[in-house]
Image (cartoon, rainbow, N blue to C red; front, side, top):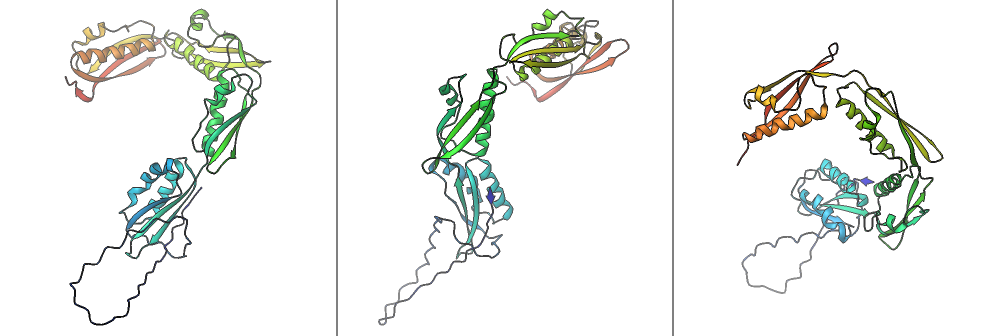
Length: 370
C-alpha cells in the first residue's frame, strides 16, 4: 500500500562562543562557509502535525530502505524532484509509481524543512521479500524440475507476481491437456529479505480431443475445412485453439465468397474426452462487381488492375484482396512512392455483388529516399 505522510520537521541549531581572553588582531572577514549538505535519514522520523511546506524548493531527494539490487531503479524515478517546488500531487504520483514497479509493498513520503528554508524529500520504502527458493507439490504429469524452470528466482515476491505465477502455471498445464488443473501459490519467509514460494498443483485428468465434426456444411467439402484446423484428434484439447480453429473455418468461407458465413464452436466432455462441433451458417456466395482504382496515380488504372489477382465476377476472396493491396503498394514502391491502400466496398445484397474501390493515398514519409 502507499501512504503519503508529508510533514515538516522543524530543525534548530545553536552555537556557543568561547569567552574572549583579550584583544585579538583584526582579520579580514571570511566569506561564510556554505552549510553542509543534509544527510539522508536512516529511519522514518517522528512527524509534527503541521502543514507541509508546499511550494518550498526540494533541495535533496532521499530514498531510504531500498536494497542494493533495486536502489538505482527506484532512486532514478524520484531523483528528478530535486530542484522542483514541493507539491502534494507530484509526491503522490511518485508514491504510486514506486509501488507500481512491484518492488515495494509499502512506501511513505516525508518532507523535512531545512534551516535554508528548503526541503529534504525522503521516500521510505519497505520492499517485498525476494524469491530465494521455489518448491512444488502435487506435480506428477510433468517433471517438477522443468516446472521450476518456469518460476522466478530473485524477483520480488509481490502479490502480482504470485497471481501471474498461478496464471502461467495454469496455462502451462492447459497446453498439456490438463484444463482442469488448479494452482495455488503461497509465500513463506526465510532469512531476512528472502522468501520461499510454494506451488501446489491439483492436476486433474488430462483432457484430449476425441472427435471434431461439422454441422450445416453443404457448399464446401469438409476435407477442405479440416486443412485449416490446428487441432488434432488424440492431442490435448484447448478452448483457445478451438476458438482459433473456428476463426480459421470462417476465413475459409470468406475466401469462397460467403462473407455472411457464421461459425459457432461448441464442445462436450466426458471422462477426459472432448467432442467439438463447428456449426456453420454458410449463406450465399458473393462475387466481385465493379473493380476500380482511385487516388494517387500509379499509371493507367486499367494497366494496374490487370496486375491484380482479383477480377470482376470472381467469388470474393478476402485473402486474395489482401494480396492485391500489397501488390499495389509494391507497384508504388517501384515508382519511388510510399502509399496506403484502403479497400472500400459497396454490397448489393439482391445481386450478391460486392463493388470494390481501391483508394490509394500517399503514406506519411512521402517518396522513398535512396
